[in-house]
Length: 308
Ligand code: ATP
Image (cartoon, rainbow, N blue to C red; front, side, top):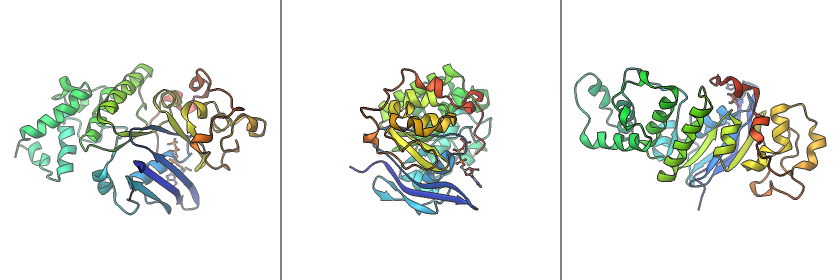
């Protein structure tokens, strides 16, 4: 069976800056995969290359075995790539249900919601039922008629997930879902996401600064640094690796750590991705009991929005 998504050799340059350099990444059906890396590592650029927001200079993207490299964003979305935004993008006074209706109608290409918003039509009962099913799944049923502006940030993130679910994605790309949330809100979001994923069966690619969330939510992980994939493997193994410490803390001599991991060699920015099944070894350190706390990058502490 082909992976849900397979990106091969993705390279992206911005006038001289190599933002991504030959990155390979794949996600299997129903998998939860993390994409992490320090500021400027290339996470957002990669995310946008998968979505079609950016065209890669080199490389291919396959969705369910189909080459979508040349397709625009909306066609990739219809074929099964869903995404969340960090902020709810629409008018603050639209209700939660209307927000989902827009996604539902975009999928059907009717676009009638704009007429509805000025009183020229009403959503059909089947459309409302479909929205409400997703809202119930997310525990947001009681908020269906609330204006978006009254929601907490955590509730808004869930509405974003709901909007993405209206297109019934095979792969859900989550862009920094923890941004601006505190620990308990992040944990609640992760719990709900896990429940919904179990119910619907889509795969998740989580792009995150919050290493603790990635450690608890994903089973496999990719580490980018300076546009290169420097390690990949089971999340617990990667979190405890020399590559991870070097990428985030930067003050360790990778040469002294080289024997501790059989990842990409510990030379941040110069390595190649280690195969997922090669990460654990007899010589590798066991996964730290609680690695993320120690490895939390400075940016995560501020909970800032990503500037990119
Ligand atoms: P952060 O975690 O800070 O959001 P990131 O890992 O998402 O960082 P990107 O935003 O993808 O990293 O940036 C990767 C590199 O590409 C950086 O050097 C960045 O300055 C550069 N870059 C990204 N977008 C552009 C652009 N539109 N024009 C020029 N350079 C860009």
